Length: 266
Figure 1 (cartoon, rainbow, N blue to C red):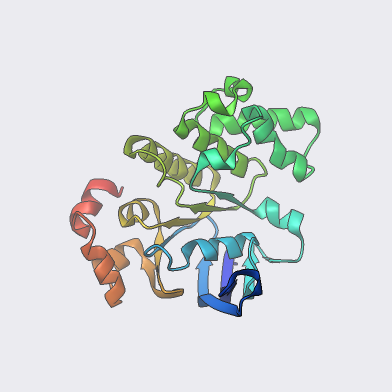
Figure 2: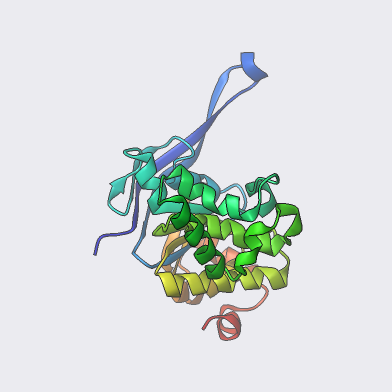
């Protein structure tokens, strides 16, 4: 079976200057030869401490930053066709308020990805908006609400709906519940689970919270200083971590892996 996502020897860095615009050019490498694969319908969690390069890798997959190496999504190499790529992979980011246009109604926000990708007639797009609202657990009447009329959890549901609208096969969820309170975050996490089960979505779930990753994901990749130091099934990584860094991360988890699994993983 062909992988939904293949990341092969991806390297990435940023350029800064020591004294502003006129200073010496300094290249700061972030990712060092990353290899990662996601099978169709699989959820892979990417964990590590802040600054290790998790978000940068997600941005590489989304085509938001330059990189070296190969990224292949659903058989299409990144950089060959932006519109076709946008229909294959979409993103959900950390702060839903920053992702939504405050001047637009929710319905227009949800329809915009379809307009941009030239998908369907006006009537077909409006029907898709209603379908997406139901998928994310909102009544179709929400399309007439402004952003200021939505709670934070409802805003994130709209963001998830925007990602779902073009019917992608892969979702990049970058700290998608970290800005939410515990109860709302749990609802969004369960929504991801339902969408995965009902739609067969593949997902790269980026988080610093090991509890969430263990609950949601089939496999886990652990990143440290721009390198993946360990990969395996959720049970393997939690039950028998091989890398010292993974063991150090697990020691910071409030509950032991066995107790955590019994309490949260179904």
